[in-house]
Length: 181
Image 1 (cartoon, helix red, strand yellow):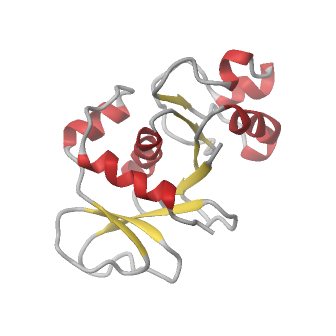
Image 2 (cartoon, rainbow, N blue to C red):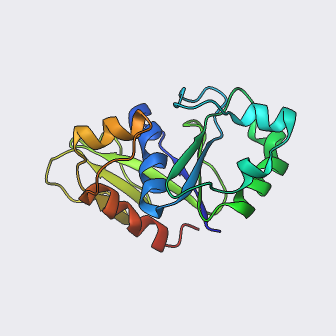
């Protein structure tokens, strides 16, 4: 039951799509948004409802292969700890989407950084997943560089549709294999 968290402080769109891509790379996974002001991902369920009503067996394990998404609904992560532990225990993989503010200080966090010219977002000593925007340039710190995604794949993920197999999603598989301490 691996669990990773994505944190994308510089780019809202990258912050919304990165956990979906990471989950799609796992094959069967649950994305849980831990940001009370997070995006309105497609779907009917949200974390706030599970905290209030309690999760059902259906919530705690996948019904079929693919990615399920639980938008936040306005609940702080601290209030959802018991539900989050139960979800992580039942799903083969879980991706937590962290709010963009304040660098998280916990293991299993994947910083997702845009790779753009001009040293606008300098790297640091922490490994990261750098998202290429098409320019050839060295990565500013340790980690991996993801190829540029097609607009169709990003659109499919954000609309809650399973994308066709593609190299961008395959590249995200590397993230599951690296230590993110």
